[in-house]
Length: 451
Image (tube, rainbow, N blue to C red; front, top):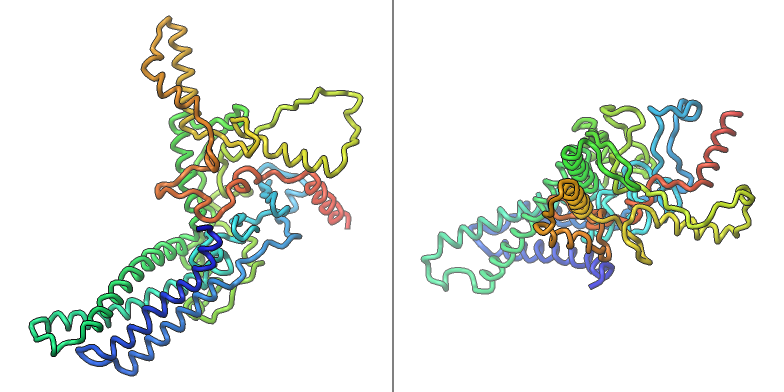
């Protein structure tokens, strides 16, 4: 079933599930011992159900945010004047949005735009969990777990009462329909509350550490690159054979647990964290974030990754000095050629579609095989037969749709696309700011300086 169809069914399905657990449970609890459901308990369960539905709908229908078209990264006076190496900011550019990308923002392939502080695209809310929707999402999980845990205690007491009365004749106990309903609702509630508790615990851990699920993936990716570099002399090979030094970089957005929670929930008031009718954080508050200052000024996240860098494509046209400073190409044609050139770098296979770098283990196996052949040739030996089959597999590797180094998975088997991120944009378009945009910014800075 297509993803968009699942999303269209998600909201009605979750609403039906909440109603299926909540209201039949009220009917059962009123008819089962050891004592009838009190009016106070009934009001509490009704309030829980209403708050869960409200917070869920807020998480579903709140706009996840859109990066303003005129937004540009802030630059200090030293960057404008001296363009110092220490404070030079890396420019994140989204090719599909044709706009700068703020820190912690990512391009969602479902929403088809860059989302501020994107956590992931949730199929169960049919919406992005972002800077604006994250507080509603957390409150939904919190009240769902709290309400269903309270219901589990009430259902459990009825189950225990039936167990203690199991030696009585059947005509003195509840009807088979009531017993089946109790067992079914208890089992369903137990499974759902267990799954939601795990999701809530993980979300609260990320909230306390001020990380998103995407940034958790990036942290693990950085650790993988550090392990690779440790065995290869501290450097990894980038496009065109460039040697990229990989050094440990601290995560910049962890600014203290209380500040982390306040930033994530959009308020410094702890009461507002739990209040279902709290205001939605503004998009403007999710464009810039205070870092912890553990790294040098200008250091950006995520850390350098050789597999996200461009390879300079060799030109196929001969250089003509007489036409070095002339331009007769139509602007539309020039733009199309520029787009085609930007799709060309950092790939190893010749296909008409997007070409991707081979996975690290394939490239490493090729290099190891070549080094063994060179050593065997130098010493006059022939030991290629031992690894001939493995080497042949490495050389015959061809990318399938969606495969390549950006297909790297973390320890839980997740790729960036599993969080709803457009991998092609994330891996091959960052830092590739168009020349026209750079000149426009330069003119704006110069005009601002003269005035």
